[in-house]
Length: 299
Image (cartoon, rainbow, N blue to C red; front, side, top):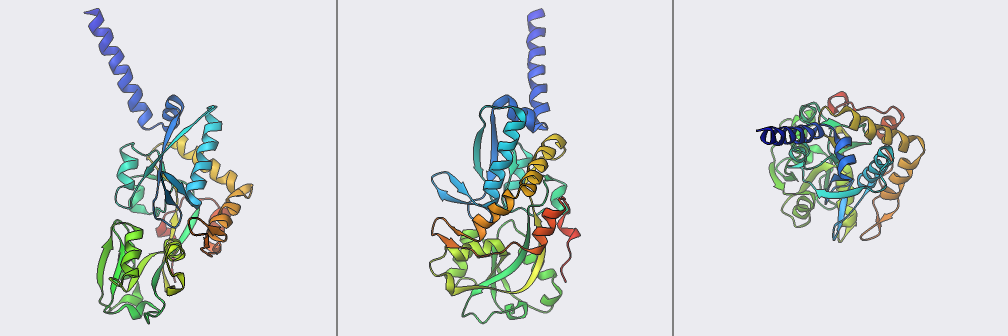
């Protein structure tokens, strides 16, 4: 009987430890010596080169965050496990513990704050319109009667519908399974315009076979703060992530990283995206915060 009680106690203790670590990511990382990093395969802020190699501004920034956390925990080695995520599954994978931190191109908004926690904003995105250079589309009003593509799990076309300049317009909406698929629809003529984050549009255009055949046009549809995403109610882990971001801002390394990925030639085609650091992103770095999209206004 005593052995049974002891076994039950040990099992309960182990289960309690696992439960505690579910919302104590630092403890989980320290005890396992590993962390699961959610990354994107075709985003403007992070993408894959194939063969398990993930790169980009937010990917490399996230790696630096994790190296800072490794130092904080006194770990001689930290095994970073890369987990590709999509617009559809990124939040569930963070919630269920599959992914410990996701640094892709996720907008911090009030709806998502109910499901996840966000680090300080590290990029302020502008949702724009990409089209073929000879399409005749130059603004929102030119989208009337056109076919628009956006990516499943994103909110770009809903944002367009809410824009006062879109009143009275009718258009067909199609969905790409990821950003690369959405751009392919534009490339092959199945869509007249691709509505998405400006960085994603610029990155896909730069990687295309004929970058000069495309242009980003029209009004800014929305301004969205992009941030790394974590599980809710893990204040110690969020603080560690935010502290690393502040460190990268203050020592100038984040600005150098931005220059590397947006103003210099990048792999795989050594083409420059050419997207200068915006005033809104500079402001977010000057005053680190985790404000949601709803606190940003578009004229």
